[in-house]
Length: 97
Image (cartoon, rainbow, N blue to C red; front, side):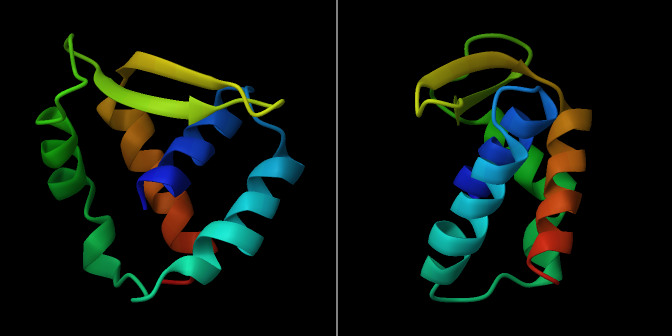
């Protein structure tokens, strides 16, 4: 779920094309989920609280490693709770949970 979240945020920030995000989600990540996530797995409060405990976190913002077009990786420490919650909602829609 973390990779799906990172790709949605990268898309929303204009770092990842819609086509590449959809390809990765539809062809690689979603099919590899052994257990289909349930709606409660996308509870923004629970996910954000877990992200606050991430060892990569060095500031008030949440840490996230995202892929950009060209497959370059980018580490950010400024992900807001609002961005994370919006991305989680989007993932739930994509996975029909």
